[in-house]
Amino acid sequence: MLFERVPLFSTTRDFFLFCLACGFVLSYTLLLEFNNYKNLTRFDSALVKATVLKQYTKAKLTKTKKKKVYQVLKLKSEKNFSFYISQNKNFPHAVGQKLTLEIWTDKISFYQYFTGFYTYGKVLSTDSDTTLKQRLNQHINDVHTNQDIANIYQALFTAAPLNKNLQTSFSTLGVSHLLAISGFHLGVLSALLFFLLKRPYSFFQNLYFPYRNSKADMFLAVGSLLFIYLLFLDAPPSLVRSFAMLVVGFVLYDRGIKIISMQTLLTSVILLLAFFPQLFFALGFWLSAGGVFYIFLFLIHFKHLSKIAQFLFMPVWVYLLMLPHSLYIFENFGIYHPLSILWTTLFTVFYPLSIFLHIFGLGDLLDAPLLWLLDLSSQANKVSISWHVETLFVLTSLASIRSKRFVWILLLLGSLIFIYSLYQLR
Image 1: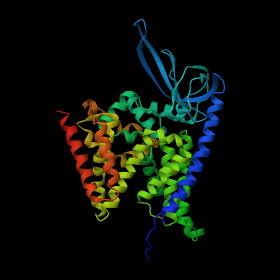
Image 2: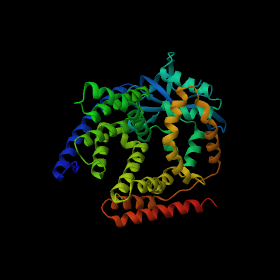
Image 3: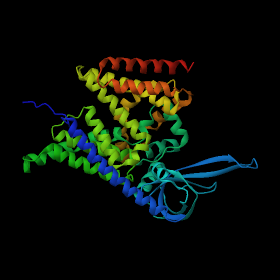
Image 4: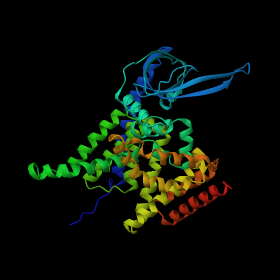
């Protein structure tokens, strides 16, 4: 007998009580963060320990019209706030290293503390101990002769930042989301781990514990391994929110609650913002939520289609409806941008395959195809849309939740923006 899954909230009162509870959680979280902020800014300067996330060279003209070259470092402190400092142009490469710094804090506002800030800082010492993550990055660097290819695999396996040229290349190809470890990667890893653990678990379950709930046990095993991986990567925000949504999704599924629902998505977003208010200012969070929103919109309004039809049409649907947001934010489009639909599909095979190849000492086997892909990114144009068009698209998206008529209008708008982008390439 099949049981129909129920919505998470059956009445408006239940949803109101949930929001009220999340409001209390958010208040307490903000209180803790404000206390950390006050401790940081108690004096004009503070000693902090932080990890270097990015490092790049910049240049500017001084008041005397001389060109000044310097290094910019983006760091994440042990207290989980991010900030930027500048150092002289000869400052050594330090990405992934832990530094002890003195930073000036007298002009930092609470808003800047949340969103990231620039300050003057002095590096006092560098942690000389090599972490497992650094050793893995060095191993990947040794496997590949091309530094760009090594950087790609470092981004995929250890969440290392991409250099600026690679960021532009993948943005032109429309596949930036494939290089930033997030929910998509977590989904592929979950499926891979489930596949690897399914048979051994079934063997031991049949022999020793047939009474156990296999779904709960498998999720606990897979979830534990993913959590260890999350800690290994130093808990990047994109992966934290994806892991949290994975846990929330399983808990709801295990209790017979409908997963493919806008109510469930809204609940997950509110819950994540309550516990991690910094996500409100994270562009990646809203892009991830937007991607899930359009996937749910497709599954809700086109659930009558066959599984094969859904598999074929959903990538096109998500591409057309995420394109306006991408153009509004990044303003980057190339002739091969539409092929991101194909690259995203192929990535579900490439990602686990590349993991196995590196484990068995064949990590450079796919370097040639990656170099060929990078060559395709040479042709790019700046294509942008106005905030009026973006606002109209967002409002139409929200209206599409209730009315299928607006779904077709939304699809038409996305298609017209796609045609407009191609026209700009001429």
